[in-house]
Length: 211
Image (cartoon, rainbow, N blue to C red; front, side, top):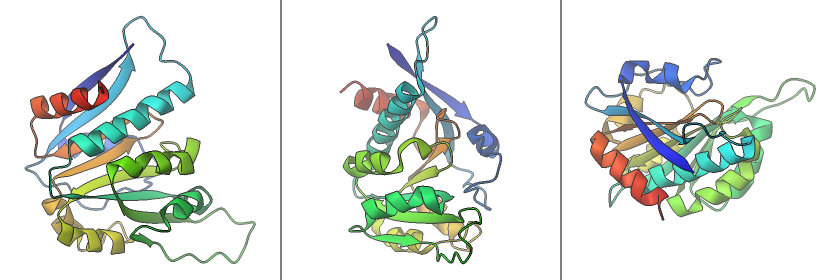
């Protein structure tokens, strides 16, 4: 049996906890100071094995869906951002093709060169996340970094439009987002930035995960 762990973090150290040492998808702006940061993990009970990579991937998927639904206030909208190699993102683009989306411009003239790094942004509902996970497959948390933003309707368009990680609109977008959820590299869990308290976050996630 697995258990949920919620640890409060210093927002300034959260990107280091996320562990994307190659800088993949790293925003070039700081998170708003009034937000709380939490490390979210589903772990095996003490003395039990964490299971196979497939088990860990399943738990991560459960946690992402619970966080997306549990930390998104009524009236807000979910925007997903994936950063990673084009070869891994292409299948997600096929999944997203009938949804509101934005994607980095792509040019690849030499097919022997490494796959270029791109970003894909998609507006969707938490219920649609299972289809995304199936599309991205094992690359999620390995070579593809996923972020989720719970934002008012007026921020959906700018988020879909923003390719660059240093876009001048990021401070306003992050200020208006009620919650931002980031994946920890290597299937380790999630980091959530939110206005909600630790007790509220724990209660919301535990309730969703127990269903």
